Image (cartoon, rainbow, N blue to C red):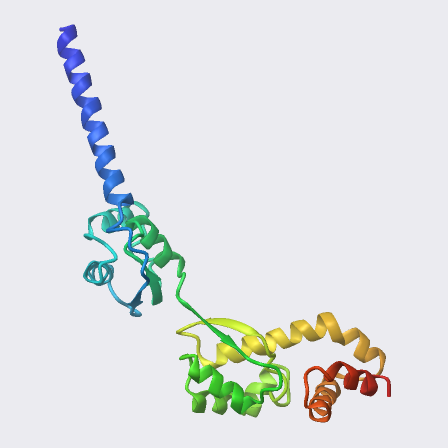
Length: 231
């Protein structure tokens, strides 16, 4: 009887180990060590099955098994977010699932140099593959939209900086982020001092524009700025 029980226990333990090994293999084994990024588009409203099959077709997953099982256990089948993603064959099914559920979409970097006007900014945004120039300009010159952001117009208020946006970012999101950055910098670095000299935000932007025209050289701008600032 004792030997029979021992055999049953050994069988149960062995079965459990095999199940655990299987689960680990299914969940945490990537297709390969290839870290080459593959762009994967998850369409709005796409079913979980379609997304899973597409990942297999693109070589991100070896099969849908681990991906489907992990999603079922995490109750994540309806939590995948639409967007453009960069995935690799070196990612495990669990890693891929987490990225899609968290919405870690591919980001596009775009740098707006100092001194660029709205038309130049629009062209830069278009060249980055984000928004068509005409679409950006239409919204950027919309007075009602500008007022909704707290400005009479947006020329001079799209802060020059390096930004990162998702492919799905539209003109509205981009402009809001740029004007939000302007307000952040203005409030933290210029507001108190300029208002102390009786200079409002609009006047400060006008002053900056004059400085840019007067200097024509980035290296000369601090000297010219000091002259105007002390007038």
